[in-house]
Length: 108
Image (tube, rainbow, N blue to C red; front, side, top):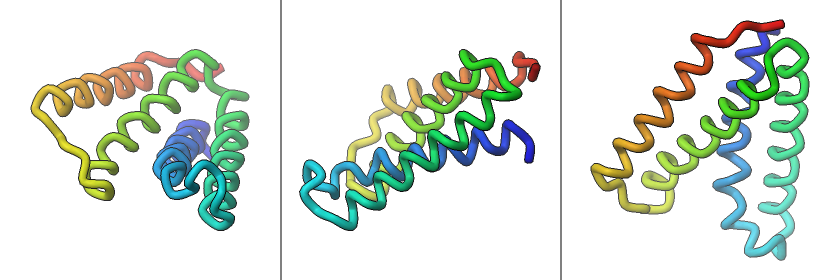
């Protein structure tokens, strides 16, 4: 499978475990904790496979960016967090940076 697809899937799983952290209640609730643990491990496994072909600096930055931007955007819809114009602008800049890293990266 394409390394970039694996990296995006890893980033999407990062969003899942990051959002799930709140529901674990400090890892005192079993099933939310299991979900977070499985999503975290799966995310890292996919990231580790992707970096076989992609530069680690680029892959890690894209992975973190997808997770950070995705969690921030999803939290607005799922947790009722506020989306201010400034926050939206900075998330937009983060997405531009992720796309720029993809466009300027070469797989090795």
